[in-house]
Length: 443
Ligand SMILES: Nc1nc2c(ncn2[C@@H]2O[C@H](COP(=O)(O)OP(=O)(O)OP(=O)(O)O)[C@@H](O)[C@H]2O)c(=O)[nH]1
Ligand SMILES: [Mg+2]
Image 1: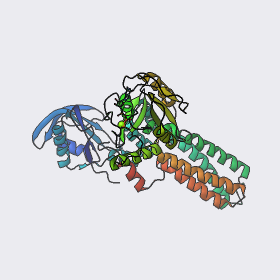
Image 2: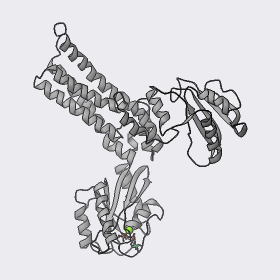
Image 3: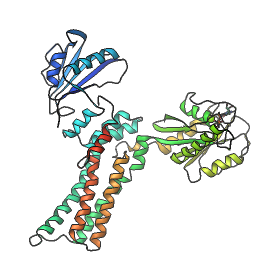
Image 4: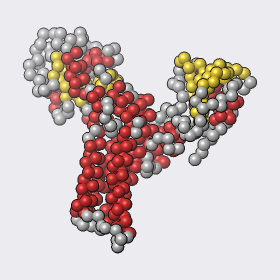
């Protein structure tokens, strides 16, 4: 592995109180000697000095040395703390690069941490999840994973499979000396493994909702107040509202936090047949948004009876998890029954009825109570578990049929490989590239 120095600005781009330049690699201390006026020798100790750009001082700040192998990347790391101006940070970085460091790729520090065995792949992904977390629940889920709780579950499952693999392989290779494993014993272990995998998989729905948020499409006939409802939830005027039917023509997506629940709201075009080509394209997108949605807010106008357009929308959302918003409840009520269990009378104009709706969303979708649990928050992990289970099922069926040990063994191997994709025990370069390229530079 290449341990030559990489460097990047580790703090967010923009102006701030401080900015941190991170350098990692064998030659990091050597580079620091040239860009910092004071010796930085002691491990994990801040030193005050000047940051140099050639022979000129550009800032005064701190430097800290994290000595290999007990650093984030497992390599020698120097962090320079300068003032957080865009130009001063850029100049400090330039200075470091001119002394021999190479600009780090996105996620390269964490990638090195993984390759140097400082963390496994699930933990490395948790670093990215923690940075991207949009709610407190997402923070807890990421922290649990970063602490290695998911990896521990995976390695427990792996140990069980490895034990029987080792035993089966031994009976296969040294059939005269080792007692063959009884098929009932084998089946019982395989069944436990399956239960363990299922237990993890059963957390994926909650986990994915926590991490990615709930995709909630706001749909309805034209002019019922969909965009007004989006603005009410967002707490600001994000979508254009007019009394002209067909105002919204495209899908507008915004994320909002509702008492700790992350909702990705999609405001859509009112569904109707329109001769206007642009509006009709918008309507097609509305239908696409319904398909993609985890939940649908069906908005209807409570100041009139349901009409044919409302009924058409209702037929389009058939089977979807729906919350019916009976809007315009500040006006005299004309609407009678709506065919939905979850319905709330609100006024997007005045905010009337909003609290009740928010409490319902919180009760139904808040996952705060799961903060201590290990959750699958990542589709990649979910798929790996599904694969792993598929091969366990196949091993169960081969055992039941009394097929030879080598067939069972090959299923177990494949099951292990799938598990290894979660914590990186067996993972290809392409997957690594895909994971780390989504990180920010400097992480
Ligand atoms: N009285 C009253 N008027 C409302 C309420 N909500 C929305 N309106 C009005 O209804 C009209 C349509 O509102 P929009 O939010 O643009 O409706 P929409 O469903 O997004 O309409 P399209 O994008 O055209 O499909 C506007 O004149 C709003 O001010 C409400 O709760 N009460
Ligand atoms: Mg609209």
